[in-house]
Amino acid sequence: MKIKIKKTSAFISIFLSTWLIYNSVHALYNGTNASGHKLSDLMIALQIISLIIFVFLWLVSILKITDTNAVVEFDEEGIKFRPDRIQKAHVNWNDVVRIDYSELRKRKIIVPILKFPEDIIVQQTSFFGRSIMKSNYKRMGSPIVIRMEHYSTDFDEVKNYLDSKNLRTIDTVAQS
Image 1 (cartoon, rainbow, N blue to C red):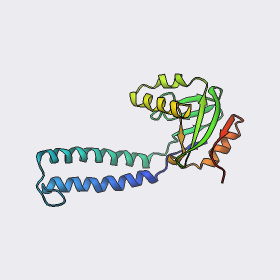
Image 2: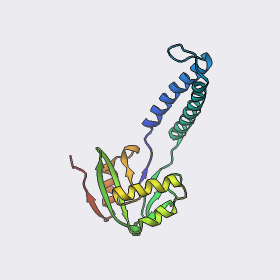
Image 3: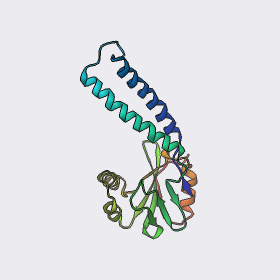
Image 4: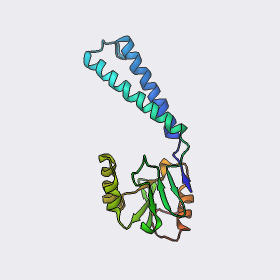
């Protein structure tokens, strides 16, 4: 079962970043802010920095829309992650103790509880990736937390697939 990113947030990001790029370019071109006051040197520098950030956001959003690859994949061997999401790209079912289903602020999440979670945290090469995994481990009991609102695949479909794997599960999501 392959799970892909939802395109909705990317479209919203493209719209917002395009609008912000336009406003930054407009302010820089005219040399004035929205109320007609002349921009100071500091404001010009901030407009240039924001323009760079918004162009970067726009490019990332375009890449998300054109990306057709799965971000997370559940197969017969285990859970596979895209290498840009997590450094250890594969977790075998043998390394999974159980699967927890939970709800955090009305958002459904899947938490694979691992035998050796510290091993995955240590394998992360980026400080940012390690920090997120440590935080996930402290809060959820696993460095890997799959937040389903980011993905196009239905939570119940993924849950049924994982339940068919006969792993021990803990379901704290309220059934409707």
